[in-house]
Amino acid sequence: MSPLLQVKNVTKKYGGLTANNAISFDVAQNEILSVIGPNGAGKSTLFKMIASFTPTTSGEVIYQGERISNLKPHIVARKGVVRTFQETTIFKSMTVRESVVVAQHLRAKASLAGYFWRSKTAKEDVTAFEKYADELLEFLGMSEISNEQASNLPQGSLRALGIAIGLATDPKVLLLDEPFAGMNHDETMNMVNLVRSVRDERGVTVMLVEHDMPAVMNISDRIVVLNFGEKIAEGTPSEIQNNEKVIEAYLGSVDDEIGM
Amino acid sequence: MLGFTSKQLIGVGIFLFMIFIGVPMIIGATGRWDFYFTLTSVALLAIASAGVWLTFYIGRINIGQGAFALIGAYVSAILVVKAGWSFWISLPAAGLFAAIVAILIGLPILRLRGVYFAMITLVLTQVVTLTALALPITNGAKGISNIPLPSGVSLFGIPILPDFAGMENTKMAFYYTACIIMILTYAALYRLVNSRLGHLCRSMQQNEELASSIGVNISYIRIVIFAVSSFFGGLGGAMFGSIAQSVYPSSFQVADSVNFMLNCFLGGLGYVFGPMLGTLVLYFGWDLLFEFGKYQMLIYSTILILIIRFLPNGLLSIRIGKGGDK
Image (tube, rainbow over all chains, first blue to last red; front, side, top):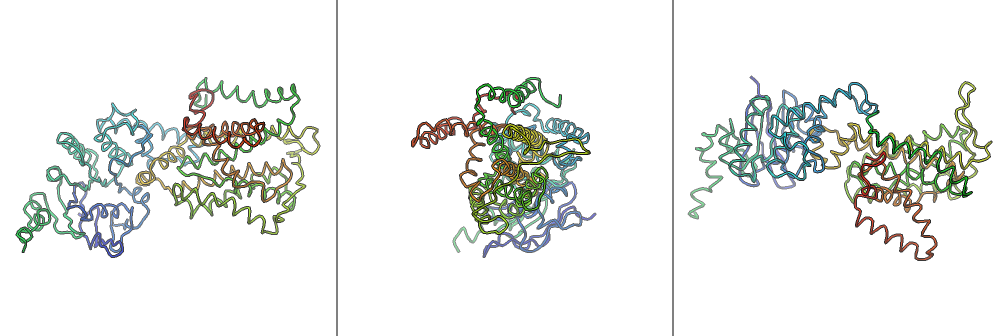
């Protein structure tokens, strides 16, 4: 089976700095793939390029046989590749439910003019959006906070809200930007289960950038490791744990330690 | 009915009664006919302010509405005086022309945010003023004067709109016309804000990046909103030119653009009907302070600063949920 999403020789240069150098890997349908690496390894840049929030310098991202790099972000989102952000990027003065309703924009059948004149399709859309929002919030265990203003939510709920907004667009591939950052062990475990159920029950392929190694090892089917903009390893969690290059990247090489 | 609560309907009813029956009765009783002109001005400025409010709604500070009002005034004046069009056709044409100009200008500048966008729009009014001075069709500094009063319109022999020139009391006719256009503007604005487009605008106002990640074509919506906003500006300007029966490059200046923005601040950026109230209060506030002579500006600006300091959400934030306000 051909891969759902392919990253092909993707390079990003900012002036003289190479943030990503000829990165290639495939993402299979229904897998959870993590991108890890030390700070400054180019993980976030890679994510931005996949979601077309920034153009690639060279190379391309192929989704279902179609090139999606260097398009506008909303077009990539329409195709089904949707990214979430870290917790500060939310609709602050909307309630949880309002955010999830707005995020279903892509599911709208009526035109904008139809909404202005309140056509029948537009009314049906609104009802469907609200119904799906309630369903989704229940699925994510957020029904209780659905009428809370987003700016009043604690960090853990904000992360979940980010995922809810992403899921509301009905994505095929969801890119999660550090979903476990700043969470304690229990919160992380809840989130791990949540992400897994997103894949299992909604059929969404998940890619995530993360620093929390235990969580990454727990959740990932496969892992791609970046260091200084280069891909240094790719494989299952156990393969990655035993990969010398990876250990070196994280711990420094033996030579470094003794100063030779 | 129409998704309004009964409370809102009563509010709208009282409002309509006041402007269409109450005000003319009061003016008739007191004999202050000059109030018609003042209130007509308020209505027209409120139309232009509604446009500015709409650009605020996508998170852009617009200090350039004077430019579009001036464009509207000139387009209508030129169509009526030089091309011999009926004023009533020139009115939407003026709005459309302003909207087209807004699309052309908006394409490059709407990428800017915050203070950068505000600065560019601040320049626009001056640019249009200078263009009006330079172009032959606008008659330079002499402007266009002697614009005829709107003529009547009849369809299949049935008069739809009266001939203003044949009227004894054009002030009152202009007052009614301006109020009707203002009500249509705000009704459209209310519908827009409460439709999906309005929700998408809100999402963009709060976070453009996130909005684009959920598939919102943010550049398209920005252009649409800026065009609608400028359409209102052109409409208000064209009406103004017709009432004054003249247009000059100085008819709308940078100060007017700033006032349009202040009207929105004062009334409340969170309320559709904010700019309407803001325009009324600001316009009358300035006039009422006239007695203070040279201290007029000082007192006026102090009050404005205090209002913005203590009522950052505008005057309407004092009385949420009453009348037809959102």
